[in-house]
Length: 227
Ligand code: URA
Image (cartoon, rainbow, N blue to C red; front, side, top):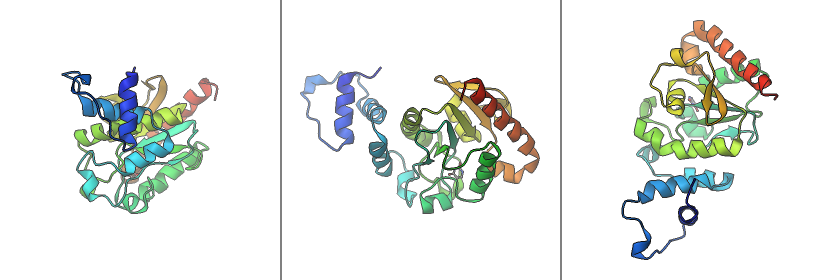
């Protein structure tokens, strides 16, 4: 539960409005920046969130990006797909999963009767890590409020976490995908299925069979929930 005063201050700060407070209004141990950044994200609408992400300088990736990659698709989607981070092509075009891995993701979506337009696709990170290296834990942590707010706004009925980075960040586990896939997870009340990243499936096509069974699991969870 966010304190209403924190929320008000955070909201004003997010809007670029200076908040002046008497010195004794702050509690001595209050982690002001972290609290207010999270509270700010937690009360943003789509436009505010989009703007806040595009202005973000929370981590060093801001310096190397061409642009942030917000996410695409249906803002009221039943399905939310969460990947890792933009690559070179995504950084250039400002859209997630537009390279070869994106084509593979499109095929996975088609297999379950979905499309880029019917689902919402987001990444754990909104900026491209240099040389396509793995995101650092601090970068994922800095970006987490944004992803949490996207999930809260979409209110998906199911989340598909594709690849290690998304799965580990969302579950808080450090297990490999092979151990996290094949059974349902619960993300604050939303069922979540973990599967292999489409880029990995391109490199290891023999794993497509397992990924297909993960997609079937996700579809089954959706129908059990009455969607
Ligand atoms: N891989 C991802 O995880 N996300 C993208 O947007 C592109 C490739």
